[in-house]
Length: 131
Image (cartoon, rainbow, N blue to C red):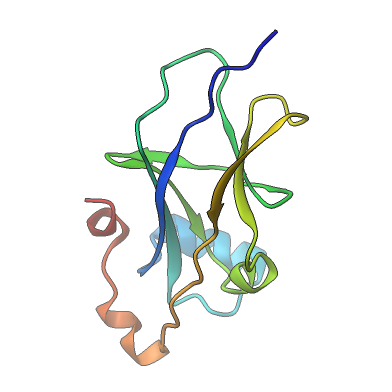
């Protein structure tokens, strides 16, 4: 069985934002110390893939992105720990439908912008980042 073409990525952007209440709970559960900001990784797609019964799974290098959501220009996921960007520096985004065959997108994870705790109060809400 031949897999359909994977989504094509136009750009990857990382935007710091204020954590939601659900984010704060997850951050506390994970024990991450920097809870004043989260990082929204926006993956702008060239075109949205057709709706099928088989979803594309997103990977950063060899690590599967546990959850991602749709926004008007593509998909996004939220990173709670800035160490994620250090660990995955230079890693490429990949798609798979079966966790064995991977499609390299030729796009790397963008680095996280640094956020000072004093400027965290000025961060946008996640809903604003995605509009």
